[in-house]
Image (tube, rainbow, N blue to C red; front, side):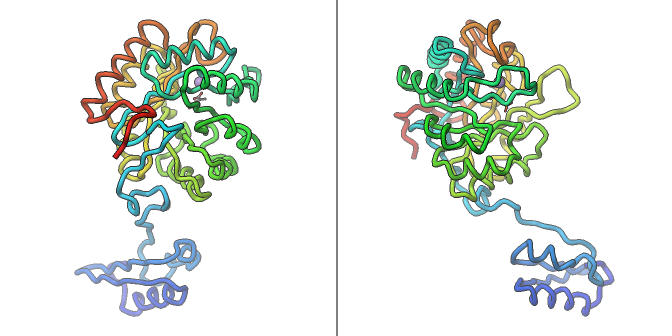
Length: 341
Ligand code: PEP
Ligand code: MN
């Protein structure tokens, strides 16, 4: 309330809130009175309280997201992908080609990923390309290749879905569905993956605030799916030296606000092979629950994102970082045999 608000002004607010079915708690300070409201936010926003006599401001103090919020769920969640945990006790390396191109390329990339310590395979069969003229992915043929490579290597599959109509098809092959940065606010897609029965990796929109990202997760949770892993993949800033700017703060901030695991994509954030290992180290140091990294047997021939794909020495350096650093953060490597308390 404004400093000079009268007792009638305060009573007026309390009465209007009570008439709408809410509760109002009045706390009188020396110079100011604050009225705390408990009830349905949507109802309160229709009361036009801000225009009432004596009211200084109306602000929301509780998080607008509920199901993913840590307020009601202080313990951090672990999400299992084909039996592999992603959560607070472990560190999970997800690696593979940006795009599934051929059976041979996908198998070779999966073997590279596995040799570096990856326990989940990434690979896109539906590619959300900025240019409509760029390779759009193999579609269901790509999903079949991924399923064959899972059979050959034992690695569960993480793959992107870009259209709500494809969710059931992708979910019939995948162990985890990925919603990419360009679709973070595609609400019908979020609702569809919320009903798909498989875990979902939700990448942060490249222009989204952390709150918007968590609200997107809430859409998925609201449809009954709480197996959500958040992925920070870099945001757009004024900087042009990197493809995106990795927001390392997002990892501890999201961990503070939500009980969901948070991983980092150092490949799509830096966009450069030489940055992947340093950014991976940063991700581990800020407490990420895992990373998702592009690898390719022949990056110079890649149909998508070759400049950021790891091979040879860079891949070995990544493997060393992922072996050595997570134990310093109290984390164990995550595979299907890892037991989590
Ligand atoms: C990807 O992981 O292949 C991808 C397209 O990522 P993003 O949505 O973060 O650009
Ligand atoms: Mn990519």
